[in-house]
Length: 498
Ligand code: NAD
Ligand code: MN
Image (tube, rainbow, N blue to C red; front, side, top):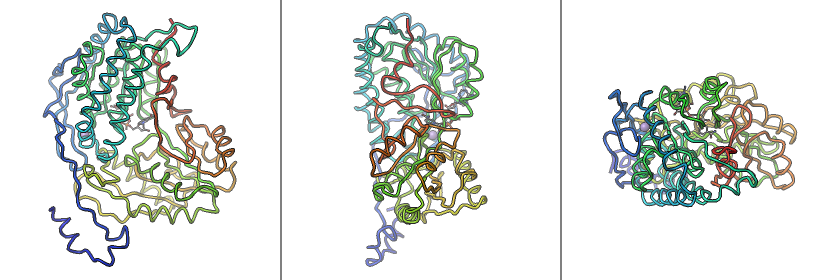
């Protein structure tokens, strides 16, 4: 038994223990299966794992304990070039010509292999990125497989996407993804690209490359023709080489608005098709007639899921003034019982912040909230002494001008604002440069319909939050980006009219 746990049990008081969330102590329930990791990950190019031409590697760490997990190959422009050449050869030689029915079989095979290796992938994802094992196990990995299943079904039905027009693939697609849902973002990108007949060069985020490189092993196991999928790891420079390579005819980027703008500037004037999934600052709007306990669960899920590292996180809570006090009281009680700590523990609600840099950014923004006069409420939980962790945090008394109401924090921090009328809620919700998602909680169906029309957000959830499905297109308005991922719309972005 670890010392900390022993100490906690010794302190247990049978009467006070009944007060849920006060002295309630859980025994550790660690996930212990073998994630089958390698000490060193090479680049996946043309169906094989190859060392980078520069011979350079960088370390990836486990953000929950700051220990090194593996060395990851650093791809430079010459490696990216090799990957793009391999993708082009695969596209013109095999994949672009293959009947959809045959392509679909590979996608089904990949989907089933992801299910077969689900446990291994879930553990690897949690180790490398810090998210709770229950989320990688129950959300990230199954959803990644679901995206391959869904798109496998489309591969031989593309002519029904846009009747009367002949659609053809774009060729070599360059894709760059962030660290918050590493394998899932890969699936969102690779599954539609392959179903449409394209070949891809994908760059994972530098803190979370492992599951993308393990995906290379899945491609090998599926017998996918060489060069159809290429994975080049590295940081921004590698990403830039992928995006700017003359052979990539479509670029799909998910990441920050800042980098998205840089990419758009560098590609302006080229013929490349772009899709951008960028940041967000979603409003989650709760009306006085909403089912409050359900809404509180939705608010908690909306902001604390994946430590708040979610582009569509409900980070601005707009509460109708009449119920604001009650909602705040309920939220404070709720965050007191959230379990923060070892991501590999099956009972953990909030795992580790993905990186020291992200932790610094969150800390700085939270300090600005206090300085600008908002009232901070934090869970009294104890944080592990090693690793990057942040307490679930709520700010009340937030006004629209505060930085915590305007900037994306990308952490477990909720800013609460109030409103009196639906018009005021809409105005406040839309008063942001972003427009990725929003939530509406009310008992009235007509109000849901009206609000979802008025809210300038790509996704509007009603009486729920953070629900995803491969059939449902996802994407933003304004500075949250353009283009869609998922559903028919997402697939169409990977095709062009012949
Ligand atoms: P980031 O923009 O710093 O990095 C994203 C990816 O881009 C990484 O792989 C990075 O290596 C790469 N990159 C960095 N500089 C580059 C350059 N100059 N050219 C090409 N590639 C470059 O973002 P991040 O901090 O890793 O991710 C968090 C951000 O991503 C948040 O703002 C979040 O809202 C956004 N995000 C959006 C969605 C969405 O679907 N809209 C989903 C997840 C994350
Ligand atoms: Mn890592």
